[in-house]
Length: 343
Image (cartoon, rainbow, N blue to C red):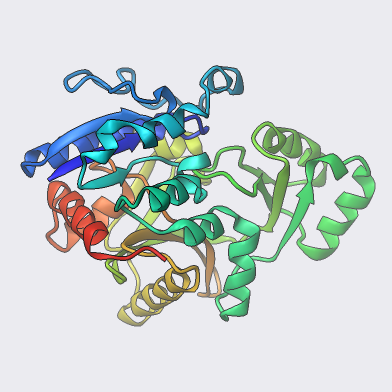
């Protein structure tokens, strides 16, 4: 097939996206597909078929705002309108964060009548908005950490905010942007004196900040492929917190797949993962992230509708455990896109 791989873009996860795109392009070519790599931030300009898309790899920090601001978001529309898209059979979305994962690109492709990988417009938007997805989890009886949503413009009354967080959530707590992925702008706040610093960090990336109860325990994730759960992966970060650096710096985290859980607990978290996936209306594939508390309860944090897709990312790790290598996984996702009608 002729597959257009859309990657890069102007979100704070641009580097992660280019890394995913590079791996996907290589895997699709191994399966015999004709591949057109396109950087969404550069409109119709195609990436070289031979050059590395991210020569220096993913850095310890996401790209800064100034470098992203230079890229014109309207060029994404040109990428969608290009003649390259019209001639392709399917679009593989290797985008992460921003317009690539919040339903914007999905809506444009729906209007263009072009099949694409991953979830549709509504599910993508819901999954990207942590506050909305957590409301749906609660409605569906899926345990999720308690939280507060704050507007960055309403953070002036420090004493009152500290008092509310202490009363409703306690410390430590987690502060993060409501609409970013890859733990961009994430802070674990041990003491209320560090709250404002965490808010300032989150405000660099968003206008809406999520403050969440911190669940002591283990970091687990469940990949979903064709609506079926994959083996559970446990993440053991060097810092104790799975932040951007630990996610994308080689050797900063250890992964155990399948996670060391009893058969009953494995089935339980997989079923919750499926339930969260379906509650948001996701399709084809995704990843559901959890904290496993010290009293053996699974707390659903979020659903990642376009998870990282390098050969060492979490969904590919889980798929490999059941005998699906990376090129086969990518090929399967393409075929799922062709055979599913987006909602």
